[in-house]
Image 1 (cartoon, rainbow, N blue to C red):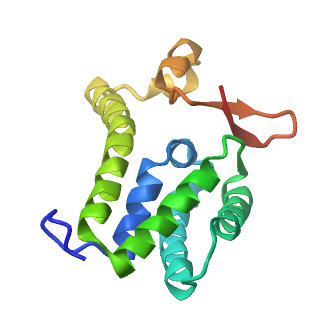
Image 2 (image 1 turned 180 degrees about the vertical axis):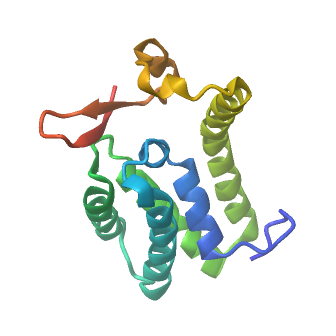
Image 3 (image 1 turned 90 degrees about the vertical axis):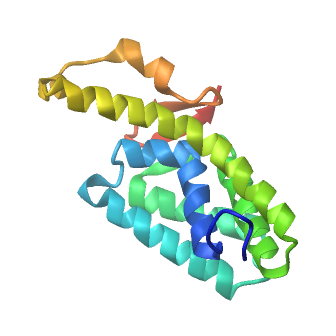
Length: 172
């Protein structure tokens, strides 16, 4: 579907944009919760989510959310307790429906809304990466930087390491 961004948008493009805009999921990616294969898992997840949504036009939010929660738990050891899985599952399904049925104006609004959320995360990550690259000093990885962490977390969620070793994203 052409929504006026210079190229036609596919379900795959939309799913990738949703994942890039999802704060709890982005924390899992940023902190490499999938280990050394985190980036490959991310690419795989975008692909299988796209296929699942395209092959299941009657898919409901709860089913997709449960499916994603299971993958997050299995692949990243991640439990999102902030209900964001329900919210973003709904966004994915709404976007897929708009891409199938239109109208293009509504799809453009949905696309732009995701850009705003993801932009905040991307800006924070970009600033952090550029400052560490210009530093040229990689010794800082071993030093604790507890005082900086609260400022970098999204306002609506917090990252919690449980006693059992699971990482959770919880509402504040």
